[in-house]
Amino acid sequence: MRPVHTLRPALGLLFLSVLVACSSGPEPDPRRLVLVTQPQADGAGAQAFAGEVRAREEVTLSFRVPGKIAERLVDAGAPVRAGQVLARLDAADLTLQRQGADAAVQALKAERDLAAAELVRYRDLAAQQLVSKSLYDSKKAQAEAAQSRYRQAAAQAGLNANQSGYAAIRAPGPGVIIQSLAEAGQVVSAGQPVFSFARDGGREVAIHVAERHLSFLRVGQPVAVELWTEPGKRRAGRVREIAGAADALTRTYAVRVALADSGAGVHLGQSARVLMADARDVSLTVPLSALTENAGKPAVWVLSADGRLRKRSVQVLRYGARTAELGSGVGQNEWIVQAGVHLLREGEAVRAVDADNRPVRTGAAR
Image 1 (tube, rainbow, N blue to C red):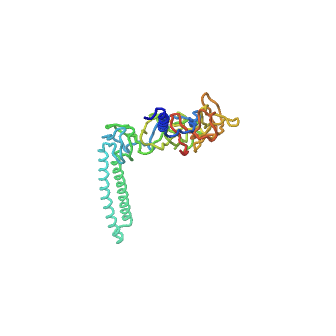
Image 2: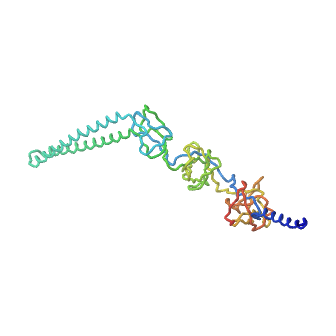
Image 3: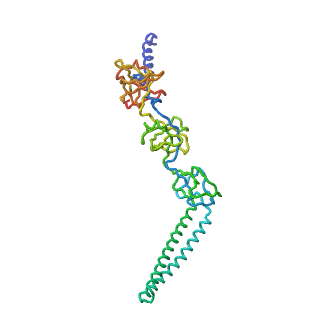
């Protein structure tokens, strides 16, 4: 049997090898972990306007002839297709007018044909000098007058035929009925609104701005739109139209903002806010803790594309309780370190996370 004192070194070596095997694994990332943020647009340099979602094309539909509404076939909110009949008038009177016009055309046609036949006979008699030239001229005038009366009656018959078609309102295209303004049994005049119709397609936000805001508004200007039903979610838009004159009552200017994406979640009549930067005062804010100094001037640490830190001088317009307003030096899409700035070094490689502890990727190799 081997002595116990000879086994102790062997047992120690075995225990040490087990510890080494258990501790093997990936080496920790030696890079410093930093908290980063992006500069935010200063609220003082932005304007918010309340508005309403509207269709790009909205029209009021009405009958082109007066009469009594016999039936209304759609309700407010109903989707419709192009050419669909929306309402009809009682067409009894229009039908009688059309029949009377057709009968007048037939009568005048017979009168025209008779006058033309007599003109031919009198022309032959005048050539043989059996009737006077004045009588022939009289028959010729009668034939021309009969022809004119016939054309007038034919035109009136065509008008009456068109009016019979005007007894129905048809959808001018695919869209939705916004509002119904008349009911069956109601007597309406020509041109009286019966439906408010919105064509399918682009959606816009209608806002009104005061005169003092016109100096920084232009057609095509990009803006952000936020629906009240989707707080915090901003949609891209652009200024499509600016009214040429102020409203006589409100003294404000009507502005239309076209939405780039008018798909799901955008409904007619929704309340919305249009956010636009004032071009006279565009600035960004950063936390006070993000500021350091470079040669005695304010600076921040910017996370570059290679994952390293670069110190950059900035222009501070004003200091607040928790933030500083910058005039230049960084962009809104750049990432800056917001804590522990006095511990950092130029060109240092770091691991960056945002306020939600999510890794920030800048294109650096991993």
